[in-house]
Image (cartoon, rainbow, N blue to C red):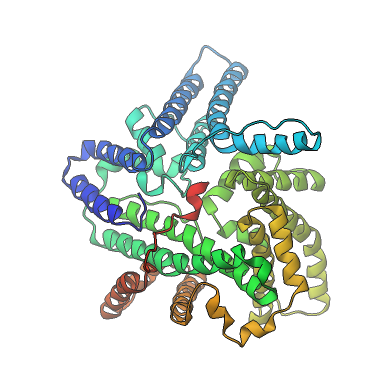
Length: 502
């Protein structure tokens, strides 16, 4: 069930009405039922996988919690037994994830070597990737680690814990919530004041903005991206640069749009989810970019992989090793393809180069009396960071490493400056009208992100402080824009969110 579908337009108000009517003590059960129905709309059988993951991590959490309070064992014995339980939880859950997501990837990799040796290839399996498996698996595993570390107490109520794992707004594409945030809210849910006009209004406006990013920007710019990447061998620098830029906008508005709708829907229900994006394309460094992009995942890898490896509390070379491991695994998390692995590895290389050259750049700026607080200097850093991020996105979008390298090669070797002047840009999938709508929508996006970057307020928070006539005017325009300018065209099927495949 897609957020940008008629089904969800019927589903969410229905869930909301029943939720508001039910007694406070059983509301979470209704949300759990709704969440499983939401997931089963994709595949009935795969709902068993999320149930299995839930039960395993629930039992592991209970065992670890009991061991912590057990006085029969000393600290060393407790720690040993708890590590065994956590290991069992990880092996089981990651084993399920690896089977469904990476089996054919491993087989294809093995077949590459077998073909070189002129040996028979191993047949691949017909496996359908369960939607959102990477997200709910990591969320559940994060809970067991939090219990082990003592950050949260083990949840005794299986149904409440099951709701934490399967909460439908953020189930299939995040944000990957921490137990300390979402689970604690579920535990305190009976005390929630349901009717709160400001909270509900903020949530609805947030959902409208996420929908605007999806149907007005993402689904429109996707046509341009698909056309250029499919026919990239026919184009040169200008067209391919626009294609790479368009994909950077597509993946940002697509994933940020989903997260924003999820955050808004949860807020209407009375829950606060973490912000998953904080104007990442305004970052002045690659390190800052990862503090602003897919925050829930980057902090998950930081807390549960990078820091346990040693983080930055070690010598320089081990720190660089930890960075490369973390970002390479992050790339592999995104998909079973070497393009994703290289994308993650490339971002790790970026960060290492950045750390190596930052002291030198600082010394040069000091000697040259560079005005590092000036707009021009900051803008040049933002632009430079975006260029490197966008270059890496080519590998993320390409179907193979060969295609990505060839794509970049054509950008370097072939110049098609005439594309800027002969209106051939309007033959790349979007006609002149659609292109103008896209440009106006991107102007709105730049304005909203600019407000968030400068004032640290999202659209709903900023509108809340504005004159009521202006506020409602913006809300109505936003809704009308989704209805009128949403890219629904003849024969158009509402596109899935990109991150569903991860």
